[in-house]
Image (cartoon, rainbow, N blue to C red; front, side):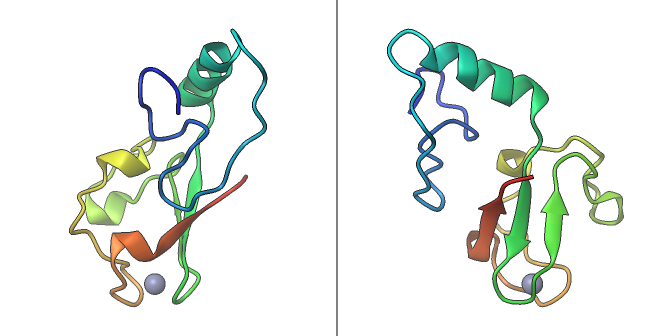
Length: 92
Ligand SMILES: [Zn+2]
């Protein structure tokens, strides 16, 4: 887990997926680069609906660029009603 605690850092508390550790002294740089530039996608494990941070979900009130961590915890899948916690991060 990086020092600033961004959701998109190595640990990804959400699915336990570990990223390769770039080594001492570099973790912060990698973390910040990913946080600033890389959008993630999250897929509903129930129906396969994909939420893209880059695209957002304008119909749901989330403009493009809305981070997953900014999605309300009580948000549910617009397709099947699955809880946010039923989404898994997918690499893009
Ligand atoms: Zn779903």
